Length: 213
View 1 (cartoon, rainbow, N blue to C red):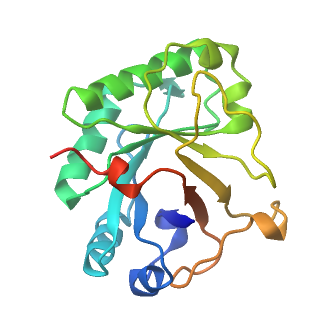
View 2: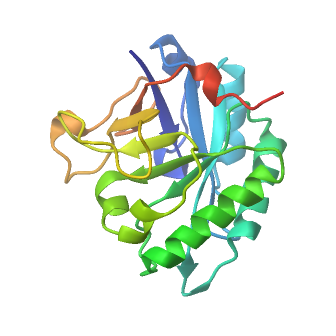
């Protein structure tokens, strides 16, 4: 089975050469968080990943609102700009999870859908990342008419539970992450990355994540 990793400024400087030598063929790199908050390590991570021969994509943390209502289309604009600027070769990822914004399920659904459709309008079909328990805590999300974008699911489990609605399959499974609250078996490690790192099992061919020519 093939794993990929995702990194952000929280991981510090990553040496992608040993990452690649360890058998990991691709990485996702954080680009934005909400609106107007770029990741400070994006350009460096992208440059180093490309030099090491890794395929890579960028992701943006979606905010339904953060102190004030945010424009998901504008967030998508920033992510698309980052994707093109650093020459990402994989489909952009929308990171939808608890970011302390206290938004409702309806607000989250509207934000995710607007974010995705705005990326689509720029020729970038996204993938959606979310946490199993967080997604299922909002009935509106499970019942929503989410387009069939590939699902990247964070679920620190010994055995996968049923796939959250409205999906019928998981394309990537983040089974290890970081933080002292996680049991050791769920804390990810990778050569070239200091400390813990998110590791995800690729359950579809990597080619399916590449940006359409």
